[in-house]
Length: 192
Image (cartoon, rainbow, N blue to C red):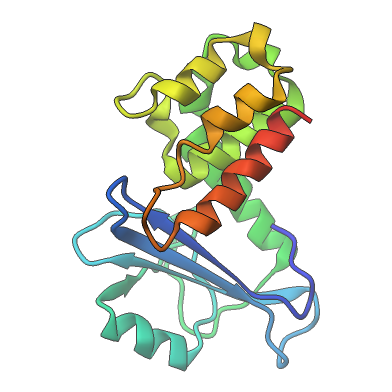
């Protein structure tokens, strides 16, 4: 998760029906050194979303509360995050890696061809799983991406790979354009 000093990013977690489960906001701040950023993670009420929190801008907290979000308050080790906590980009990356290792990796390693994929294909699958859930493989609604995983003979077919990935961009929703861009990037990474 590398951000240019002037950039901010939002990451949405959504259900299949388009309902937002949570949001993670990452933004550098002028009061912090250039290698640091504020990270805030929210989960919609009644939903469960794993996340890492850091310093929280008051304005964002107010908006999140108004929208019915809860601030997630634990680091990967389970310790509580406090308003004003600061972490570096390196620490944020380490937390992301911890999350991937603890919550995503096991689901991906169930894919029989996982060890054939190589780093770029695995990275595409990590991105997909991070966005749509680690348990996608052989799950209902994920038949196309499961076929991708189970079809090494098709892994060099750029057109087919892209067609399969873009099936997961929630057509007709406000997230469609953003998700299509993400799926196309994953397909390009999977099949350069």
